[in-house]
Image (cartoon, rainbow, N blue to C red; front, side, top):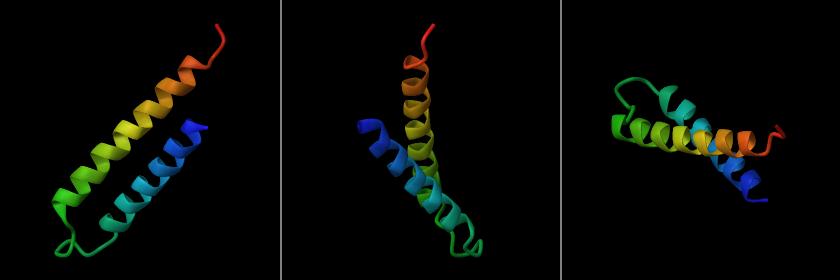
Length: 57
C-alpha cells in the first residue's frame, strides 16, 4: 500500500520537473529544479530498493 503512494508521489515529482524544464529558460527556477530532481531521485531509489527486496531468490 505504501509503495503505491510513493510511486504516485514520484510520478508527480517527475511531472513537475518536466513542467519546470519546459518553461523558457529565463523563467526556470534552478532551485526548484534541483529540489524536485533530488526528491524524485530519492523516491525512485526507495521504489527500486523496495522492488528488489520483494524479488524471490
